Image (cartoon, rainbow, N blue to C red):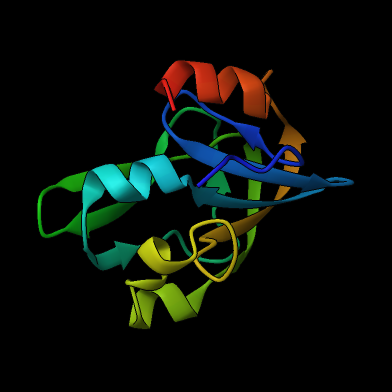
Length: 123
């Protein structure tokens, strides 16, 4: 699966879709593939203040446990309850229905574009 060019990416394999001061966050198809079958997702609560680069959630698979890092600083405005109840959405549609959280951004570090992320992962 190619990396959508309208997204920004972190070196920790999260993606970010920025729309004004709001952003939708998920993990990349590369991360979902490396994790294997996702069986559990833990997300921060709505209203939680998050800081870029810190762990804000957990994604467990049949192979391992991965951490979800905040790609930007801000406040969680929405969580995707569908992935909590159906974690396989993270594998099935990582750039769509498998999104994880939405945040109101107060500060965002420089992130990777699709070409730089593709180079990072060697895809």
